[in-house]
Image (cartoon, rainbow over all chains, first blue to last red; front, side, top):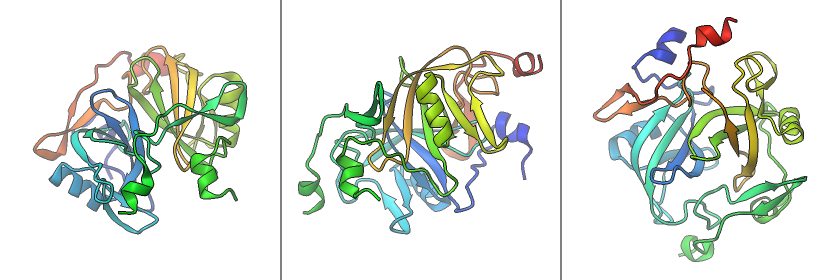
Length: 137
Length: 137
């Protein structure tokens, strides 16, 4: 196991996968810095992403690799991948067309907690596609 | 348990904590959208954050709540909190002074994977404080 100082200060990429073999990835619009989605990669998904330059994740619910956009057409071209201090989380900056959330929004984060009513949300996103049209083709 | 459509389309905030009682939080500079850090909250940390307006997390390693900046002085004033489609991840937009990473950088994501050498990193951040001075007071 690498020393803490190597992990935090070194220039070797030694991503730390969790007990399920996953690392969380924050996917960000490379132009605006807007967070589009947060998902997971396993080692295979990370290797595929690095090799293809296409955002590729591991779906826990489906138990398999998932190339973003393979169904919706709204794929991700990887611009760069950043890693955090303890190398257990990634930021992936991407160029991405269209809505990146399966509910039809540009970002998965289309609602915010309402000021003064912390059990309520308010909509801040604008729908950019109709999921029925995109996924039921 | 709430229906999928209520979770994804509704305006009730029903954060989904994982088996360890945690929800991941992506903390973002409210002005620049730069991702500063990714950490976890439990229900108590989220309630404390909402009540105080100060970024408060749950430290797995220390097993307790952690008000960001209580040691370093580099705290976070919460501007807004967004939730994703399945309500199992948060974005917290903050106003934050100084370096937000304990290694001394503004953001924890101060290294990126080197193009053409996917096992190597290169530095993209600039150190803004000396951890020895800040934490060994």
